[in-house]
Length: 132
Image 1 (spheres, rainbow, N blue to C red):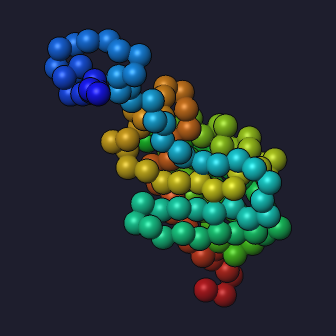
Image 2: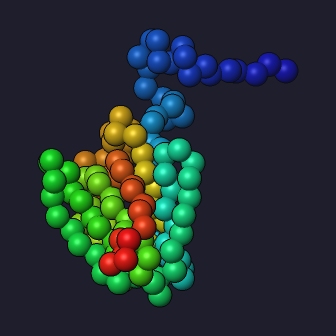
């Protein structure tokens, strides 16, 4: 009994096209939709923080330095998100359908596809009060 082995490295080296050949089809996950009572923010350094949608006050979408800026106001915190094509994120946010948002290094933007949401910065800070 003999077996035939197909090595991906040989197919790539010889420029052969094979239906089983490796193709980079993995897309980068930037946000997840679904029913949730909270929204979870995942930062590049591994830090995570979530907020209950009942503490959501309002959101603002604008532009700054050729990036979209999305400001999410909660009762105690302000979350600032910078990135590209954040309009879809804003639309889902006001419907309370976002489960999590993940921050990625800008060098991975090609993994999302053109015209897709990409988050380069998530900044979470306490809202300032009149007494502080």
